[in-house]
Structures are given as structure tokens and as C-alpha cells.
Image (cartoon, rainbow, N blue to C red; front, side):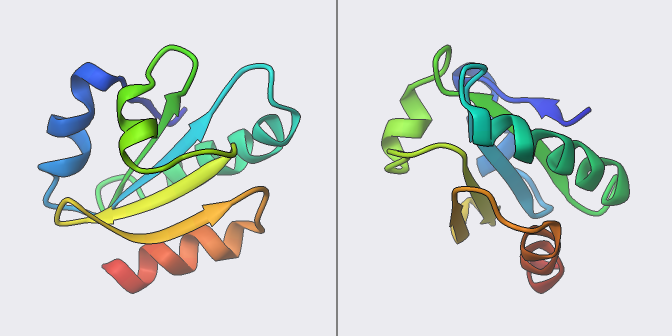
Length: 105
């Protein structure tokens, strides 16, 4: 399972990471989010040790969703050195996410 990221842990886990961080902004009631979720979990397993892969529940954690302009979910952001380097809105194929991580490695 991908790492659960909260507003309280976001800065430490995402912004201060020395590895690329893929963050899935999602909500339990969102159908497309439930399609992306298993893909994110798979990527978490495949990139263990190389990149951080996590999820932010936007219903419970709104601070960073607002800060990064997440208006539609799912939105998947890739951070490198604390900066957003890739943004995917909606459902995308797994390769889109893995290519983004590979480019940041």
C-alpha cells in the first residue's frame, strides 16, 4: 500500500525528501480515484527505495491540496527537491506515472 500522507506529514515526507515523491490526491467517494488507487499501490511496491509513493485524502487533508491547486481528483503530482515537476489530472495509464518518476531519478 502506498504511504498515507497527511497535512501534518506532508512537508517532512514530500518537500524534504531526497528522492522523487509521487503523490496521489484522492477521495474515497471518487470513482476515478478508485481506479487509480491500485495502480499507485503497485508503483509504490515497484519503486520502493528509489522513490516515495503516497496518497493524500483531500477530504481529511485540504491544506496542501489547496496550496498546489488541486481542483479535480484524482490529481497525481510528482515532486523533486520540493518542487512539482509533473502533474496528471484524471485517470492515466500506469506508464505515464512511471515515466515521470523515471525522468526524475
